[in-house]
Image (cartoon, rainbow, N blue to C red; front, side):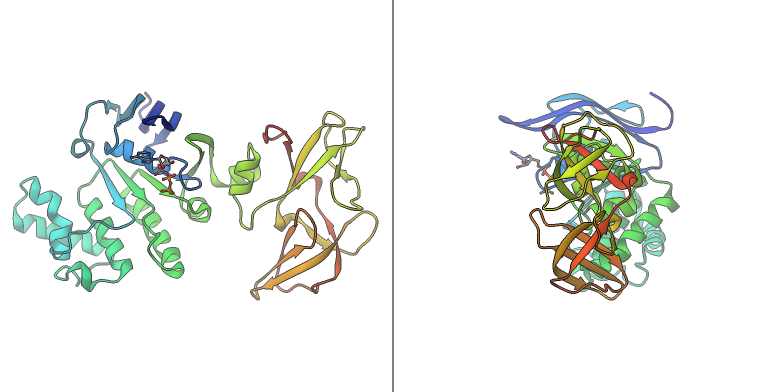
Length: 357
Ligand code: ATP
């Protein structure tokens, strides 16, 4: 195993009775990197994280942390720290005691533990709160205590299980930055489970997209956005979600016709097998509103949502097409608008397998 790999997973399988929750998971996590595991509910991301922590026994495969096999190693000897969605703080203990609990268990003297708590409080924005009980803290502060409790142990890796789910939207955005900044400052390795693709994209160096117990794709955030390997990843990454329209590759192989009324033939900028059935993917932000003419996709607008900075339009078609415009839109509900997209921004997926073409 190369020196700079912190966590190595090879062929990990996990069964719960008859249910196959993790299927042949292979993942190498570099030292110091921030890796997000993302996917819909039930895809197995928490199971994978809990297996790393030793809280679930794997059914097969090999797992190493810092070059050491984790076979038969109990959670407390793995040198990883979990941060949970529910914070898992001890309600009857003050913040300082919550922070230092693991140190005290290891036999660290009270004064030394208190000093460590003060240092961690300074790192996590908890100065002045050490003598409070968890119930006397805000949600964000409780989250910081949960982080501080992980940091104080100087673990080899931080394992986050949806740590921001219980916070409101504004605080989530702030804590996202704080967690990433802390990760960078500590030079830590972090594995972060979330179902929120925006959180994954904005925080992580590497995003791992999971689906039904398998890794569908892993890569840098913008790699996943630019080159999704399947319709599933394409639809999962990016907000608002990519539009999908069925279509057929024209006899020339250079163009595609969409299954939409009066749709013009669209240039592909490359050659594909003629007459093949495909799904055409178009991101809402790549559709430009142009004047209606024979070359444009001319569609009626059913709905417009404006936030001031952005306008979100959707068409009265089946399937519905979403369009994003920066600033304000000149379109009105009921208008027919012309839409155009660069060939470079069209994604094609096989109609049967949903794999990228
Ligand atoms: P969520 O975002 O909803 O937490 P997840 O991707 O983290 O989802 P997991 O909690 O890892 O999903 O669960 C993966 C699958 O394994 C689910 O279908 C779940 O029902 C199943 N599962 C999890 N724990 C058990 C268990 N102890 N016994 C049986 N099945 C389980």
